[in-house]
Length: 324
Image (cartoon, rainbow, N blue to C red):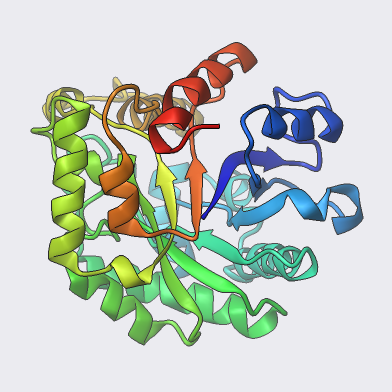
């Protein structure tokens, strides 16, 4: 099992590390094997070290369905005008999303990266707090599969395509084994698997109050779903945000009547980051969870607000998996 850290690449290594030399030293400090790259913008493969690339996280477009379906009345209701739509997605036509994913898949192919991660998710601003999304997860998976099929058919990538769970109802959150089986049927690509995110799955159970109960519940869920053989990568972090989630569901006017999309997005991002803080596990025995997942790659996906804070989080969680 290789252990990785997640990092945004633009092509500099994130916003905290000065250069790739420091990034390499950062990995060596805790005996990590590499990074899971999250590409931002356009850059050449020659500008990043291929030997540190353990995985690649594809860009996440959460408000996916109305844009992919070109539902302009809904898009204008959400974004206000076409210019904002273009700014958010990088274009006005669904092909711009396909082009983004083709570019990133080809990066993964050229860097010989063994897996890429994709969120099979869609949301909207109206139901983000209540989580009362008015669609079934199957509708979401159909849209995501259409996008993936278009991008995969135009790319050179032949490595693992991993589906990552999130916590929103009506999307891929792994309440039922059928969600994964349906995706496998819809996506025209044989080399698929799971990226299991511990924090995202914990956020679906708002009754969890401590790390040990969270780990025990995750292990129980993995056995119920019978998906261990499909898990290739484990995103490891802790979420005990159940109280906040339940309180947020009662907020009737989360945007305070402001119709400006960018203001709403700022509020939404703060809300999402409160649910999904990428906190480290600090005390629970994580070996049962790791053994239940049997991952080939384990990514310590932790908050990166400061170099000191990031390092402290690593120092707390890393020994719970294996000694450095």
